[in-house]
Each structure stands twice: as structure tokens, then as C-alpha cells.
Length: 440
Image 1: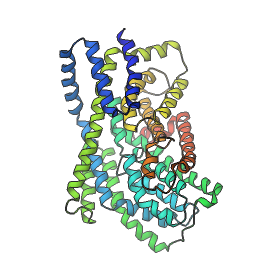
Image 2 (image 1 turned 90 degrees about the vertical axis):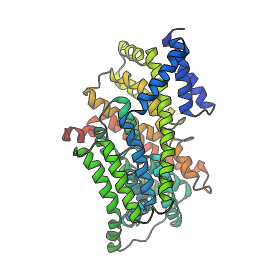
Image 3 (image 1 turned 45 degrees about the horizontal axis):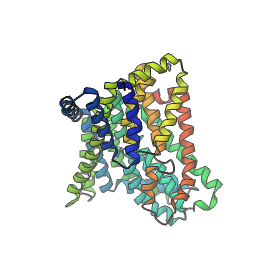
Image 4 (image 1 turned 180 degrees about the horizontal axis):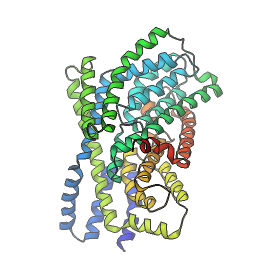
């Protein structure tokens, strides 16, 4: 068996291990290390690669941004920022038909700007918004679907942990990716709100009506949101202005969010330690998946699978747009099988060389950034795609009274909104690249 054939065979073996419920980081590590052992022909060389891959992976300075953003999310949760965001959005939108659901989406967008994690955004906002939606007569399936969809904004609106990982894998500028993600993130939030409006018109019994609040109270609630806005502007604005690097910006954001949480009384006693332990646990999980992916991708590099596939696709003369659509369709399938981080780590080293070899009428940097945003959105769709969208199960665990089948039906409206957004951004790359081109 040739090395190329072995590389191709490794993928179904990896899928089998995942189906057998082996942790995906361990599965990629096992297949990657075993493949290296076979290709290099001995234990000594494989162990040497084990040492070098581990060191090179964890010595990456860019990876230090991950625990900082995770810690920022922990502090934001304890500091009551999620409650402040939802309260302000609810005061302004709650009186509309479906307004509390729109407020939940708006709050998810705001919290995603200081969290960077989809699951954390869904879990945090679910605790805050779900009781309020039930209070005003919103159906369980619609409420759960709204919060599951809103949670996906956590990985799209910058800063985003997944975007950081993509930037490292594709060797792109993190700040430029954050800038390019801004407009698609805003479009996502607007699209979800429009979806809510359509859903409640088609299903009038799915949402109740919240009484309007006085204008003075609406403006008072905005004061509580100012700390969130300040943190976002300092972190993202500082990165774009060149005041500090993305890694330094993440550290500044974590420190600022921690200070706000302490002032608000959310960080007292063991809360500090609990935040650090939770961050360390999440970081260790992510880093182990990153290490497993590094081994598997290193093995694929030895077998020349990505390069050979890219050459083959170019030689066949396939339409670049058809290849792109097929790859995005595969991401939708993968979204039903694994989490977003694992998808990015597993597929980008394979798919990126293939699409990079094709002509989409963009510069290499513009294409890499545009492709990354498109992939991120499709990965986001996978998080809410039945039957195993991870955000659906996160919200369902908070609302055991609602059968998850009802959530499946309601969430398909949001999936449709996402697919329309993907189509628009694929057909018109300039939307994604608009801010990037202006600031460049």
C-alpha cells in the first residue's frame, strides 16, 4: 500500500473511531501517531515526531489567545453582563410581536462579542432568557430554537476562538479575520430577528406579548450595558488600531472583564478560583484536540494527501464554485457528527490547499479570509442542525419539559436563514471583504 493510499484510508478509520465514541482528540492522535509509525518505519522516528510536534504545537504564541478569551467569557458570566445585555434588549424590543425572542438574539450577539464560544453563549443566555420567554407565553420549542440559534453568534462575532484556530491553521492575520467577520455577524443577528418575526406570524400561538416599558427605563438599562461596550471597543478597537496584538488584546479584555465582574460583586471568594479552574479545564480540552489534529495533519503531510488532492482537482478542470459548494455541503454533514473546533482542525488542512489552488477571482489573502468566514458560518449551521446539533442539546438540558423534537421543527427556520446568508456571502464576496478593503 502506498503512502497516499494509507492517507486516504486513515479518514474512514478516524470516522469509525469517532462513531465508536472515542474522544476526537484521542482519535486523531491515535490515527496520526499510528500512521507516522507505519510511514516512517519505526518507533524511534515516530517518537521523535511525537516530541517535535508536541513542542511546536504548544510553543505557538498565538495559541495563548485561547485561554484569555475563555477567561474573559467566564468573568463576563459571573459579572452579570449577560443579564444586563438581555434586560436592555428586552426593554427596547420586548413589546414587539416576538420581541423577547429578538431580545434574546440581540443579547447573544452582545455576549458573543466578549465570549467567543458558541456553547458558552448558548448556555449562559439560556439561563437568563429562557425563564423570561416562558413567563410571557413563548412555546418551549420556539424558545429553545431561538436560543440555540442565537448561541451560534458566539463563534462568529469577533473575538472568536474558532477564528483564532482557523487563522493559525491557514496562516492568516487574526485581526483581519476579526474585521471580516463583523458584517456577516451583524447580518446573522438581523437574519435571525427577521426569522423570529416570520415564525410568530406563521405561528401566532408560539409567542406572547410583553407590555412596553417607559422610555426612561429603557435608557437606564443602557447604562448597565456600557461596560460590555467599553470592553468590546477596547479589545477589538485596540487590535485594529495597532495598539496591541490580538494576544495582548485578549489579555486586556480578560483583565477588564474581571475588573467589571469584581466591581459588580460577581468575583468574590472562590469565584476567582472557579473561573480559573473552568478556564484551565476548557483550555486543556481544546489544546488536546489541537495536539491530536497536529499529529493527524502531520501524518497527512507525510503522505502528501492534501497536495495530491489539490493537484488532482486542478487537473480535472472542475468549476471552482462547484468544488466550493461540495466542500460546504460536506461541512453541513460533518456538523451533524462533531463539534465546531474538531471540524475546523480536521478539515482545514485538507480542504484549504484544494480550494487555494483554484481561481475565485480574489487575491490569496482575500480568498483565505473569505473562505474562513464562509466555513465558519457553515460550521455554525452544524451546531443547530438536527438531529445532533450541539447547541440544541445544551438548551434542551435546561428545558426538560420541552421535547427536543419540537425544537427541531422550530430551529429549521433558523437553519434556512443561515443557508440563505451563506448563499449571499458566497455569491457576493465583497460583502465579507468590504471592511477589510476599506481599512487596508
